[in-house]
Length: 439
Image 1 (cartoon, rainbow, N blue to C red):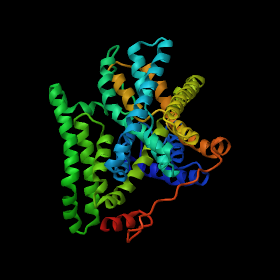
Image 2: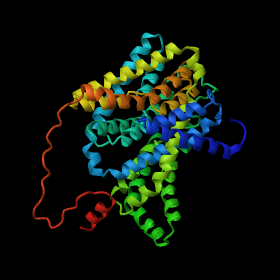
Image 3: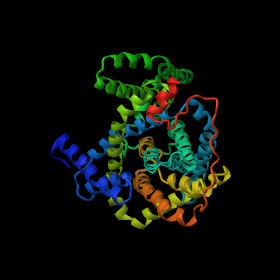
Image 4: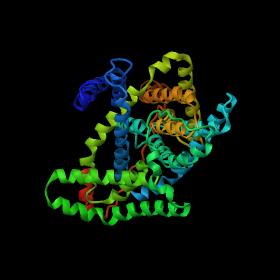
């Protein structure tokens, strides 16, 4: 697509979303798969309505992931995060460490250098935060053990991106590449003005920024939103909510931290704010639209020329990645005593590559860690594995669970009710939580 400018691009993306998602939902495929199929259809290898500019759209649309983690943080209280610390660092740490080591060992068997092999293991250990959480939310599976543990592992992976970005330049095996792949410019923005500071100065700055976000969220945001609310201009509240998330994104990027992690921390800090529901209401539409653009961009970025040049090898690599990560995740779920049903959900949901692989492959390519001949097919492998995730979850829901899942539902223990209470709040949605605060 080289004609028509911005408005024609917007028309193409919105038409693809409006047509494909309702059809996919009607067929029981889910919205994520609908977006991915739409991206493939309008991409450069089918209708050709999107060209190189699709990569720029993906960088913009990745902001939807940041908004999603901010909204998830708003749903969680610090006490709940503390309760999840075992699964975040236990399951998440085990998954990243074991996957990286096994992928590294396999890469060494195929003759790659140990530095390249280790870098490859770290990149392929990550899963897709956007696709997994959106799919689980859509199907109402986030509250299950499998959904909660999937979220914990994804949160650890987001944290792990920071040390991975620091480690990759140390694993360089050759000259930095002039050519760039997907996600160009992402990690370079993380260098910023921090490069000129000594190590202790960088550490203090990073800790100061995180502490500043926590303090501002606890003591400054509520008074600011009260002043804005007095204007009785809804668009000002929406602008303030977007300013909050964008400000955190810019600040975290400047000090080399994951913007998604910063947005999540801010969301957790504001989880007890009286304006929590107003923030959710204002940001939700932007989050949904940007995530839709991101999924369409992923579908459009699948390089079918690379796949067509060696289809069997690409498909074998996709299958190997999914099977390997499934086995590792299922084993971790077993060790942590998850039920069989939840192990299946947990392992199938996280068995793909992640969107940050595009950024990390580009970063590694530019720093001489990877060669283009290795990166190009692996980008196609990661994109295809991400596109497979909604299908795997659907396969688990429709075919695997009915045949091999638990047949008998465990008897639920009745909730304990304090008879001394004068009020019982049945339901704790938007209205219930407001009533509960007054009580």
